[in-house]
Image (cartoon, rainbow, N blue to C red; front, side):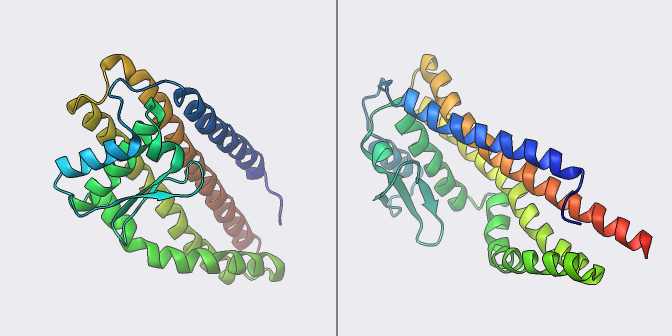
Amino acid sequence: MFFHPMDFLILIAFGISLWAQFRVSGNFNEWSKVPASSGMTGAEVARMILDRNGLHHVPVELVPGKLTDHYDPISRTVRLSEPVYYGRSIASISVAAHEVGHAVQHKQSYGALVLRHRMFPIVNFTSGVAPFLLFAGFIFKQFSLLGLGIIFFSFAVAFQLITLPVEFNASSRAKKFMLAEGLIHSSEERGVNKVLGAAALTYVAAALISVLELLKFVFIFTQGNEEE
């Protein structure tokens, strides 16, 4: 059974995901045109916040692309895209501060981040195997394979859900950092919220899609067992 009533909800969730991605790009472009009152670049803001938190050893590097900004926990490096690294806008410093938030989480062993790091090797394996198990379970009507695929896929879903508090917490830290250091005025908070809020919505949409897909597989598995 490849089509299921849950597919309609999944399509709606995909629509939300696309809308969220559109908002990320739109809000970033909009607030990239608004200069930050501090006059600092994203790279300068990142370096300042890192140093204020005793993370002098964490480098801030330039990475190609747009909206490719991230914190690498393996090399412990903050990587910023060119518009963020060199930009002096509300959007640029907001994204830079958010990525530094992850570095501070790492230093403080923030629970959700630690769990996410520990899960990654498992999820990396199970997410690669799960589609084959689910497909084989459907094709050959082997519900033992389908059940195993569901278990493996559930690790990926859990990973998505754990990502949510990690991202929301990093954004919360970013806003607190910028306000505490005087990098933004209260009047600029709206722009920061717009930029970081849109990015957070993409993670919510991704988690929603994963949860709905998992529920679909569970319903099919349950129904199949009842029919046997």
